[in-house]
Image 1 (cartoon, helix red, strand yellow):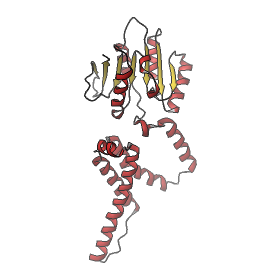
Image 2 (cartoon, rainbow, N blue to C red; image 1 turned 180 degrees about the vertical axis):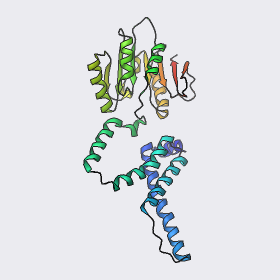
Image 3 (cartoon, helix red, strand yellow; image 1 turned 30 degrees about the vertical axis):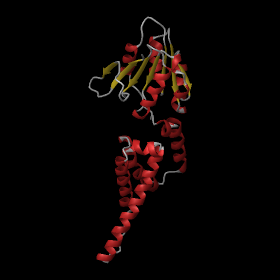
Image 4 (cartoon, rainbow, N blue to C red; image 1 turned 180 degrees about the horizontal axis):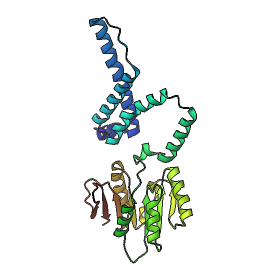
Length: 265
């Protein structure tokens, strides 16, 4: 249903989330007013609602509407937790400075996640080693990690393949800055760019590595089909491309996530 709403009204998930919270608030008002009216008419009671009850109803309605609209599972948890967190913070009398610091840190970490639909997902060392095993051997390559986060994968590959040009691009300022500083301290040859990978020309690369989100995979594949050269590799951790069988799959032990590789034809 979320896809239908997005297609019909061109709604981003963040916009849909706001509308869902508004719909939940309206539902809470209608339900509580109806119950109040019935109790007053039938039992002649002047009913009052504890604040926590109203907040809980808001959270439950929002999570339910998120489910009905087909939003991703993690959005449902956000809808469930958001009203509760706001209420809890309002009664703790937290100084305004903490809100400002939290906002700045969150903004610098997630930046345009509401638009890209790609949260901050760090990969693990076992994945870096498996990516290395997929790379063409005995020749220098140019590889870029799109959404490079803190830069771990790029620096690992750069260390193992010093003859190659290894890059990373990150749209969130804080992870990008951390990756640049870490590369300087580690004297890594990996190069980190600040920006959106959509602005890149994939034709310049032999290998594209992505750890994005399900929402971004179809657009990534369309870009790869147009720009990537024959014989080059597109590698994705965890997320598949719908209706596009991978050339190779590396399954993780004791883990449901896999590494997917497509060789461009």
